[in-house]
Length: 288
Ligand SMILES: [Zn+2]
Figure 1 (cartoon, rainbow, N blue to C red):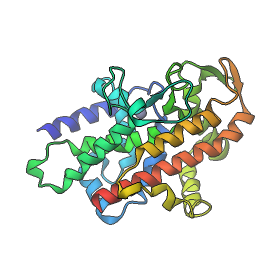
Figure 2 (figure 1 turned 90 degrees about the horizontal axis):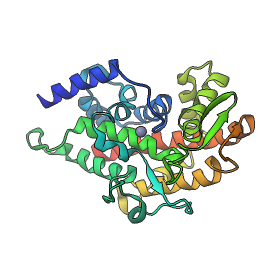
Figure 3 (figure 1 turned 45 degrees about the vertical axis):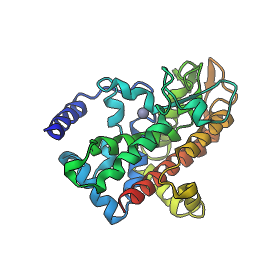
């Protein structure tokens, strides 16, 4: 019954989905991350993911990768799980200092959410009668938040809300810095190099994963003490990239064009690829 209700709500949400308000990679960013991950699942993980996906999305995890953004207005408790705020004077991340929500509840941030949903998904091995979690939702939250935590400005400074209050011009369009990293760099890449088709972009990233980045992927996937996921590492990398690339040389009213685009695109490419490779590895470890 609960799962039927969930399925009905999900269908409604897809039909009546609203454009996301600058929270996390845009739809294409999340699609790319899940598409990379999906192609790297081992057989056991692919079967289990399929079993957890609703009927209308079988074999298509990437079609629901932005689901968590669309349910924020129903599950208002979940909106703070998409990001992490760090102090304005810091370019590093510290779990006990930074992973809390606006009420100070520890663990309620993107990194804590990844640990939580990973733990929930491990209970898949229990028999289906004594499962206490909705594992479809756990899967969709994990797949989405793994993308978000790799977007550098999702681990951004507190006072500017991860670049959401920094107005910039992206070529001729007025937007905010956060949105440049969620969507504009990706959209410009697709328009300039792939005839606005996301598939070509995914193919090129996959080629780099098995090509020029192939000697790095096992390091990306590695976690200390054989942990299943290591979200504190992903968060640390993001705030460091935010300082080094996203915020650098940008102030309110900055005009961002070719120079910014060409120097930051390699960072976006890398973060999308790392998110996809790591998501697959986490699911392979849980279900494999
Ligand atoms: Zn998000």
